[in-house]
Image (cartoon, rainbow, N blue to C red; front, side, top):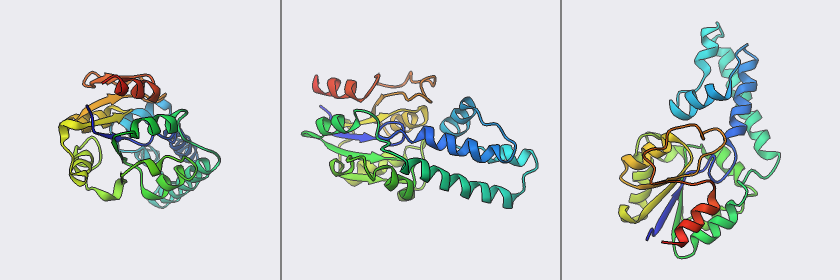
Length: 213
């Protein structure tokens, strides 16, 4: 039985990844760069390097990139604020999974957009621990975020389960020695999840599988 469930955030609990893609695409378009969904998945979700180098390659100077990055961040915040971004069924699933288990969020999101994304989600009261990007040194696919969460919870790794939506997150979880179930998002569904302990269609399926164990 899993006593602790560690959730990724973006793409798992809140549908913010598509909004970040939209804001980044719009910002880069101002520099004459077309960012496709495939580009975004490769550069952001697989490599974790971002895409500003594409603007640099077209001659965009550093000051303009800084301005566009700030514009992107404002636009992203506005998109989050426009409505409830919780993944459909997330609250019901989290409530069910929390019964008799300890829950944590382990995310690469910075505190400000994370707080905005959960302003109306109703999810956070069910989580004992939240680790955002500033609380650890190396981001996924490095195992440090998950190792940090397990340490802070004082948990037995054998009793921990990670819920992820990306290949980078899966790599981080497995490198930390943890079981990992993947719920692919619209952006990540074509990534490789061969190392996952299970690949499930949605959080309702996660709840059902946990209930059967």
